[in-house]
Length: 310
Image (cartoon, rainbow, N blue to C red; front, side):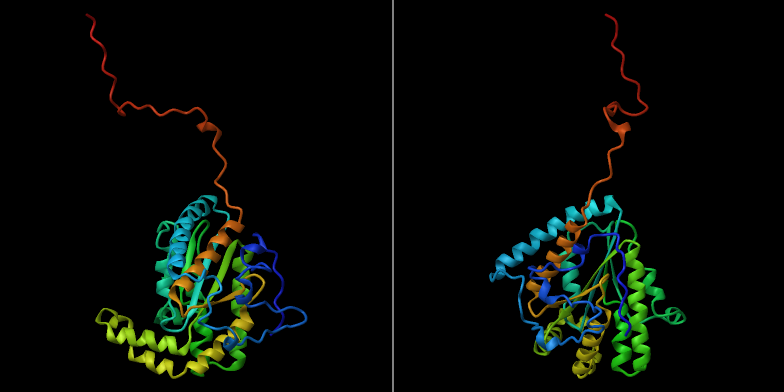
């Protein structure tokens, strides 16, 4: 693939790029550069049971997630009021990787007025009549909004690739489409955080079995999940290819080891919080007309009662 162009971004690079000493650093897929126009990614080298953000105490980690979730609520309020940026959070992963759980665990305390979620399914007939990014563009966040994608446009370089519905040339073309699409978003103020929720084959098996054994989770299970599980190795290769091809300077990928649900939430919550802090958020300047303004406490439309003359 051609080397991606470096885009001038309207927000600090620290909002989307891991610092040198950050625990985030080893899990962010380094974008290609002149020396290496294409990155080769090996998910086998990124252990799904790792816990780089953990304190080593599960109860303490769970408490930290709750603390950060409350902090995100305040930051989201300022983000909404500031209205200089938009935030797109992409949660991509295999079945049972924890996309729903991340939404509940990380964003449950934020206001539904400013945080929205889309769970992407197979395209409808009307959506198939358009290009594959048409429906995606309609759900982009507006100024001051946070949009969370449960699955995403990356399904279009996973399912069709694994099932052989598109050619390698078409796949590379889609990678370029997506890179250009995300560059447009980033250059116009959309901060993009892309998380690949990385679980192991054994952990997925346990979670699928839980869905079978628990009647309350039957609705989450489909026999088709077992057929997709048989394609595990193919999907891992497809993920490795897209991570290497679409981790760009304006929208890099982060792999989240997700065998631990608590760690998954802790890592994502921490990164989202740090991203919002890096934006230098501020409330709009005060309106000078409000200086010294006092609200009349009398009932509107009701005249004050007059004292009677003795």
